Amino acid sequence: MVHNFNPGPAVLPDTVREEVADAVRRLPNSNLGILEISHRGRVFEEILASAEARIRRLLAIPDDFAVMFCHGGATMQFSMVPLNLGQAASSKPEYLISGVWSQKAFAEASRLVGATQNGSGELVQFRELPKVLATAPGCPYLHYTSNNTIYGTQWTSAPTAEACSLAPLVCDASSDLFSASVDFSRHDAVYACAQKNFGCSGLTIAVVRSNLLDQVPKNLPILLSYQTYAKNQSLYNTPATFAIFVAERYLAWIENLGGLAEMHRRARERAQRVYACIDEFPVYLPYAEPASRSLMNATFRIEDSEREKKFLKEAESAGLFGLKGHKLLGGIRVSMYNGLSMGAIEDLTSFMKEFAIRWDS
Image (cartoon, rainbow, N blue to C red; front, side, top):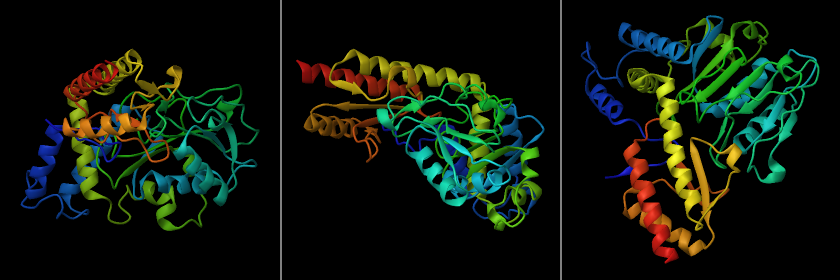
């Protein structure tokens, strides 16, 4: 048995993979495959409408939010958020720096409109989440990254601080959206690329409170303006038709299993089993502080570098792929997204226990 622990693009549920493979050959109620249909035709319009409806149901999105299907990955949102939402206020947008992706988002906002750091975990090497400070008067938005794939930390709820609720809250939820509920009474914009928890690469969704769209500058490049996507139902140009189809099928799978409550239950169970194994054996050195640990990405090291290489090599021989940590941190990273089966976790923890006992004996 082969198990895929890659951090993204990540594992798809078996049933979704099979549906997608069949759809490449021929879609139900069509003579064509998903890669061949027109984005202006009835078949794709039904797929797009179903995808949006599932997103709204699963996330319980209020009617006064626009749901947009965007190009460019989450990285393009690093530009779109400040360009669309960060230019109309008297103050600069603020960013919580909790890892590499929030650093990149902050750097792009600083370059485009100017931005300031609200709080940062850099002094503790991003082992824990930063403290949230009150935002400055007139702050156009406070931005945070909900899960940090490289360092293995995660916000379990939206960051709060005295007076920070006065600023709109923007969340990069790229690596944990659809793994738990989102409180849209406390968020004004949420964006996420699809290739972690609900699809394949090539698609990013942006959910933005409609009244914020009124402040979007009129002189933005067409495909960098939220207004373009909102006014044209994400069909101004050819959208990522295949990726949207995969997301629609993935979201159907989530709904059929019981929605986000079930996804969150599974996420907790997967993470608890992996962290229990890490904490049981001294050979494994966890990176993130316990209070900040991610349900999506468990990160740890093995002190002896040769033993660490041996762990990764033996893991692949055992059918456990994608466990090598990010190049900036090294070590080992266990990515536990929605599509990962509990059988994969059982095989991984069995391997980890056997490896630890063998090397410590």
